[in-house]
Amino acid sequence: MVRHVGGKSGGFVLLAVTLVCVMQMFPRFSPQAPGLAMVNGGEDSSFMTKVVGAAAQGATAATVAAILSAVTEPIVNRLLVKRMTFAQASAEITFSLVSNFFLTTFPTNMLKFPVFEVINMALSFTSLSGSLRGIVNGWLFCTIMLPVTNYRFRKSMGWEVNAALLYQAYIPTVARDIIYGWGRGMMAGIVNSTLAPETFAQKAGAFGLTIFAACIISSPGNEWRGYTLQPPDRKLPFFEYFKPVNYMRSTGVGATIMGIALSVGMLATPYAEMLFAYLKENKMVAVGLLVAAFAAVGMLKKK
Image (cartoon, rainbow, N blue to C red; front, side):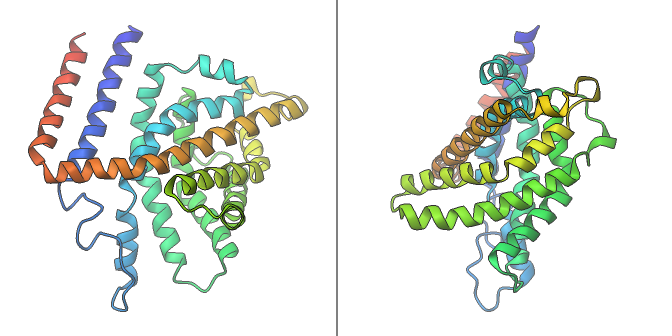
């Protein structure tokens, strides 16, 4: 039974990724479409044009991140909330869980990435300083997207989704996101000025190091969020939850996973963009890929 569910959901993952590839062929969905592409910042560019352009960017990155998050988030959340060891958390991760969770990470990324870009673009029209802009960005993004974040969290843990809990842990989450946004901006400057990366691979490594440092800086807020999200019937006492060994394991492993995942995502995104560009130029190959995906899903359903 488990094998059947895993195969079926794995087929949906294959189909979802294939659909994204095929959608890149059409101007309406392509991030390079006229009017929706990256805006060059000319004098005649309006605020709304830039906002719409920002919303259209990042579809490829969101897809790559969704695939990576489907594997990493269930592990990180178990370290954070259940206080498991890495071995215990990874032992609970199955193909069925990952493939089913991809069906959550993919659509939620398609919401979260554009919203973040729109907020970032809108704030660029203000006179706020970089650090203050990061604080406002973190507050706005958390306030708007917390229901999506908590929905995704509960799905990664295999818990029931309760609408009344979609704004659970608002204060610790907004504190974490504000500190993370500020810390990421600060560490990006420090890391880039210290390492002076030149090649794309070096820049991806510096980006991963920046993410790792920002996760460490914002970890008190993240630990507070994890403590708040514990189920009442399985809630650990305060001093047991915040044992130094638990904090170091959760923060260290979680920050490492996030840094590596986003660094790999940065490295993988150009290749995904090349694939989408190839499929756009070779529509018959894209259609054939879509047909093959549908056939694969059909075969998996029969098993």
